[in-house]
Structure formats: structure tokens, C-alpha cells
Length: 135
Image 1 (cartoon, rainbow, N blue to C red):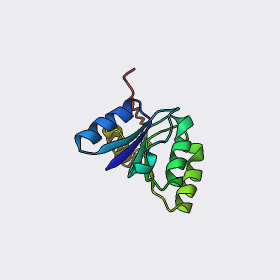
Image 2 (spheres, rainbow, N blue to C red):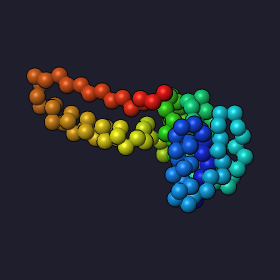
Image 3 (cartoon, rainbow, N blue to C red):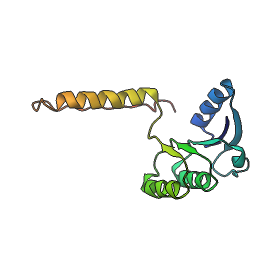
Image 4 (cartoon, rainbow, N blue to C red):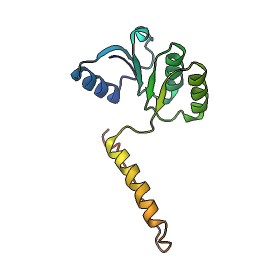
């Protein structure tokens, strides 16, 4: 598969390493101010950029018929516009607020425990998740 990486920070580099190990090809490594040159060769784009770039990245992919997966957070005030653009272009767009295995396990545990604790009104339960522990 030919992959365009939109956002070439920590996550972009991890995705690149895994993709290459699995025999995929990286056709674009786009950081904030880089061009989209090479995007047209991609089978899919993966966006782990910054909030100020996410909407442009998603829009550009949808406008060019490139399916896109986005894990960038902080831009969701524009989410419905991107969903509408995707529908109008008959495109493909997946957004996830977090792709961390640990965080997603936490989400599932939280959902399960909330259902259990909902019947026990004498308890006030809270959970906290911290996963960005490296600087």
C-alpha cells in the first residue's frame, strides 16, 4: 500500500516505521509547511498533524479522492464540515480521538464500570487517564 503521512512528528515516524516493516511504501511525508507533492500516488493518507493543519489535510485528501484516517485532535469544531465534504465527494474518512491501545482499553473499562456502578448511587466514582507522559 502507498501511504501519505500528514504530520511527521512522533506518531508519523512510528507509523512510518511500522508501515515499512510491513512492506508498505511511504509516498509523502508532510510536515506543517511542506507541500502535498506525492499525495496523488497514495492509496491512503494518515493524518497525525496539528489542529491548525488537520482540516486542510483532510479537505485536500477528500478533494483528491484519497481515503484518509485522522488521529489529530483539537479541530472538531470543523468535524461536521469534513463529514459533509466526505459525503459530497463520496470519499472515505475515519476519525479516532485516540489510537493508543491502552487508552482504548481504558475507554472500554470505563464504559463497563459505569454500567456496573450506575445502580450504586451511594458511590461517587471517577477515573483519570494520563498517557502523554514523555516530553
